Image 1 (cartoon, rainbow, N blue to C red):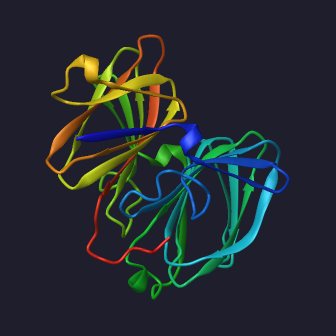
Image 2: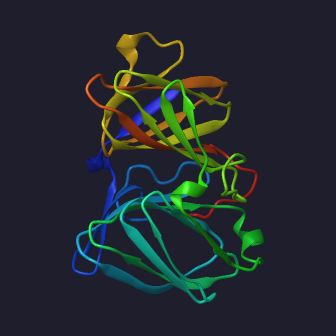
Image 3: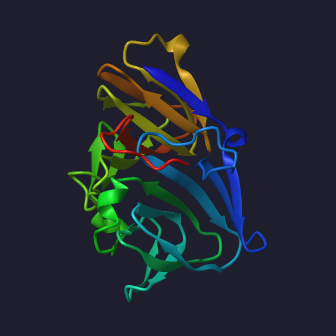
Length: 257
């Protein structure tokens, strides 16, 4: 198993307006400077923070599956499909942009959110009609795994299923505890540390080889053989991470960034 940690200094930066919204981007657009260009069909990942209420005006998308996940605060949405809605902490909006639509986003003051782009087979999805759905926090199933809270966002046990081969969970590990997650052969875990400090290792690794990770880090794990990733919180505080699993390669052409 290969484990790589990318600090904020290795991630892209962005902003809207005069800095009303600032962004750290584990995976950025071309020429934005992020070390990681993509992880398989995981095309883009931004962590946006609003310093005051601000709207990103109407702009177009097509083909990609675009998820907005609210860490805290409120995010409004309007689009040319006729939707006008708002979602708050723990909720998500998903646009399968298909043949194309325009949308605008309105972030409340002190809102933090992820926007994540997944890349299906664009030659096929651009022939489909665009759709929009949103879900409140309470609509996502959660489970307790030996004290670890696992919230399912994308996948067979979650309300969101994508065309892109993917699943996504929001995981909170109590201080001093660990969480084991299988990593199938040919797949990758892409992980952003939302809160706390901890470490990442493969199942058979001795403790001295655990890779440290802290808030804001982007961790990418990949393997050519089935393995198990172990995520461990430090002894002084819980560790919260958002984990996405995608294949490292797909059987269709990916967009050339």
